[in-house]
Length: 331
Image 1 (cartoon, rainbow, N blue to C red):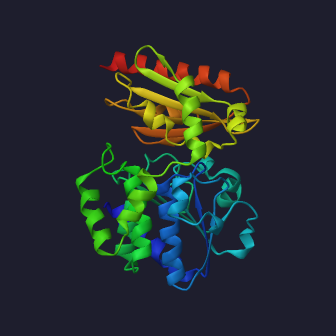
Image 2 (cartoon, helix red, strand yellow; image 1 turned 180 degrees about the vertical axis):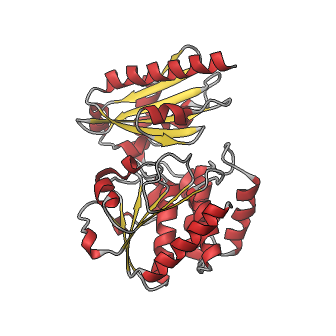
């Protein structure tokens, strides 16, 4: 860890010790890493005797509900006057805080824990380590640094976040560092069997119904780009939600010859989301950043205010093609 991170960890530890009422925030379209980081931090703070509340406006993926309790998350109704410290986890850009963005930015005492490429230092104390596999790995190192006790429950949350962001230690985020952290969490009591069963052997019936549609609707462009577009009408027909499509971009990326994949979902009447995956050194975080989102080299996402999912698909395809052309010129 750099001197800056160590210094900011000291500051964060001090602010946490002084605070009595703490609010924790994570990004829109929450994945297991942001949820694991948030629930682990919440449990640590509760064990320190703090009053803690978690905030995220969106629903969780089916499999994640077997790890964390969705009813513990506040989806609205934040009153900043009730807290003396705000903390965000796994949220690179303030835009990804959703409806809580303005209140977070206007709050006088804030901390950010994140592992994405550094874009937006929107907190007063920013602890950002892009070399980490996941925010959950970063939280593990912070807890150890601060000498906060890691119980089996906390270890399970962290292990789930790490496993999810490394795709069970198989993708490009997997490092020697995280392979050393994982067994430490297991020794601390992480229930890795429960995590594996929840994340990798669980599909809701709604997800399976959406997969039928997914197999019909995905298209391949230029022999290396795969895109699937799910409309609001598609979701309504099945009675599904965006979270029931969470695995589709990763599945598209497994197709032979595909370098960049994207799953587009019309979230509501005014917003569409794009979830990107890539292989062979293509950096989809660049494309997501152009659209106002963010993420990693091989996995990124964005939510855009646009009502027409077909128009958004054309916009996304154009940006992917422009990116690939630039990459060709740089070779």
